[in-house]
Length: 92
Length: 251
Image: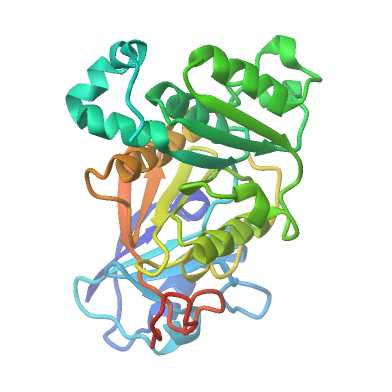
């Protein structure tokens, strides 16, 4: 099934902004992001910590709704879903 | 209501076409607290001053440095070494002598934030760090006044308006701050996000339009795309969740 995955801001600079990926039916939201981020070690390191857990400031959205990092491993996907990953910015 | 003077009617004539004299009087009666006279605080305070917000309280602790000048448009080359508050007061008052500008040179912390904000009608977040933003968020919740949030990095920015009791608070939306860093920035980005915040302030005070309530605006300047993300209150938010601060129990 096809999922649109979007990385915002710094994540997008490191990993590319938008992509459509074809993934197996049982893939979790966390694995989708993990797979895509693995292409670039700096990009991966900006989203995941040394244990492969989401860094605590990372914001995950599925179809415009917030998904907590804690539930991302058991969040399944459906054809046409849009997943967004972004870091808050802090400058002023 | 405070009546407008003839000068004011003339000065604001083009926006009185939008808001009416009554809207302009609301701006005149308002006090807005702006935390920070830097990249965001500069364009926000300038535009709120020229729009006729009656009283602007601006807080900053820093001195103008040369590295500020690519974005902090309140401060000129000749101001290097001067307190940002002094520089800001001079410029804002020159832009509009009909308003009151109060500047306070201090670091916002938990011991003074309540008094600094005083009886302001809204808080503008023009800070460069999340710990102070969280303090402003708490103060806005306590005082039941809106917090106009904005933040930037590089060509990216975000903005939302927190309405206590009605929307997600800043802590609901960003429970964990990104790591501290010396962030890259070009002045056009805080200019853009600052204008989003200033627009929110004006709409809120005049009572017109639709606010960024429970909506996070994301600006991607590199691609010139504005995105919007829906926000919702987090019932287990440690700051606003489940606390009976609005006269009712949140679930």
